[in-house]
Length: 246
Image (cartoon, rainbow, N blue to C red; front, side, top):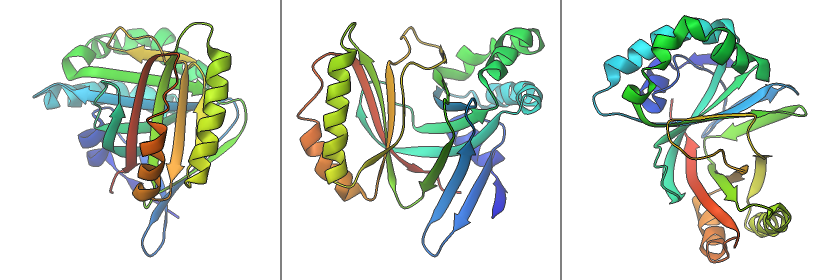
C-alpha cells in the first residue's frame, strides 16, 4: 500500500480540496481505493462548479482554509469524474468524498473557529457558481472499496411531504431490479446532518451511491428504470461517475 498525494489533481478537478491522501491497491489493470469509516465519523459528498477565471481566488481560499481543516482531522479521500449527468440541473463535473472525525468537527470549523476564516468563507460565491456540501454521520462502521474499472451512480432524491413510505417501497423495488443487472448499493443515507449550498435548494431527503461492473450493465438497467420514475419526487438529481485518474 502506498500513499499518493494529489494536490494539483484535486485542486484542478474539484476546485475544493487543498490536498488528498488516496490509498491504492494496484493490480494489473485496476486501482482500488479502500477506506474504513468508524461509527460516528462523517461521510461527506462535495460537488462544485467553479466560476470562470477564479483560479487565483480558489488558491487563496485553499491556502486560508488548509491549516484549519488539517488541524481538525478532515481527510479528502477520492475524486470522481462525472461521465454522464443522468437527471437534474446540477451539472457538476466532479465529486469528492471527504471524511472527518465527527459531526463536532463541522461545528468546530463553522462555528467555534469561524472567526479564523470568515474572510476566506466570504470568497465562496466568487470562487464557485454552485457548491454543495452534504455531511452524513455514520451510525456504524463502514468499509468502502472503490475500483477504477467500475462505474458509480450517485442519486439525490427530494421526496414530497409524507411520502416516505411510498419512497421506501420504490427504492426496495429499484434495488432489486438493479441487482438483476449487476448493480449494488454501497452507501445510502437520509437527510444529511449538515448541508451547505450557495443555492436556495433544501437538503435532499435521500442519497444513494451504487456500484456497477460495467457501463453496459448500467445502461441495460437505466433504459428500463428511467421509464419507471417515482411518482412523488419533488426533485431528482443523478450522475454516472468513475474514479478520477491519478
